Image (cartoon, rainbow, N blue to C red; front, side, top):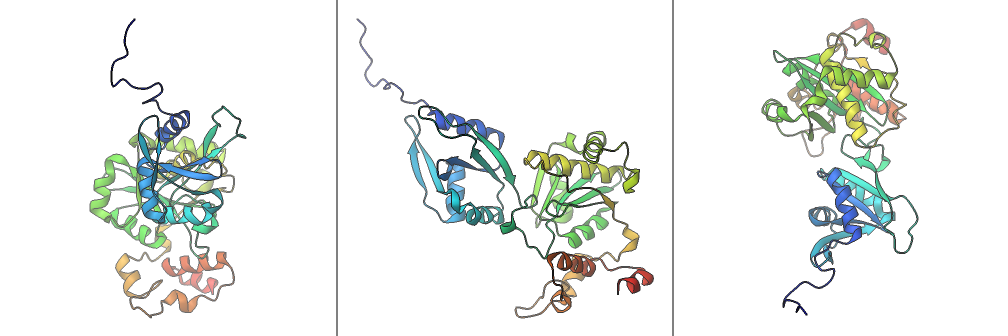
Length: 330
């Protein structure tokens, strides 16, 4: 009769629990997001996610046994999501929310699935939105001879714009639209940072997503059209590339309710006076340079609705060049 070796593992030791096996499977699909994993009446985070969440939210970091080893754990009650989710996103984290998709049954692991990925530029959560300002997601496509395509999409309002131009034009666009998040090809991140700095929240995607044929198909599929002539963007290949990549990105965040995005508009650069960051700051258009100062927007803003406030802000940051249109506006 063979003898058991001394120091051998006990039955079950070293095996990952079924719950953690499920967690790992889900987490593998969202490696760069903090995964809020619903367990009963709590959202739990594990491992490095737990460390990050504990620091960002000021919640207790503990550990739990996972088949013979310990793993970091931090969580909060499910009803506190509206309080904690905005804090995570404002801290610069992408957050994947994994819900229980069925009622718990004894002896069976509950089926779970990610229902939403919230990022700074992709949210419809009222707690995360400033209703007096747009929350734009920007996408950049890089062309030849230092030409760029840019798209700006606000998923909360359905506004969708495209433009093309050189680096200086894109810089002015970024200053005017102030996107909450910018997506761009992985291979172009260093180039982007060298030109525009690191002050923007950026997220990179595989380069193939920013190809014209793929992106255009996304646009045609979404708008259910044979061409984009009706939107006035048919000739803007780089603009289409940026716009299509933005729609693709929304799909990766589980945002599939996009029927309110009914059109896309070309930004006519000759129609506006494009202001650079220094002009916007020095003229104190939307923010004062002094602690108790007042910006121009604060003086002008007598609007009665969030829609009106957003429109006025656009007017301030994108002044018209046509005297006729200026007079019509006023």
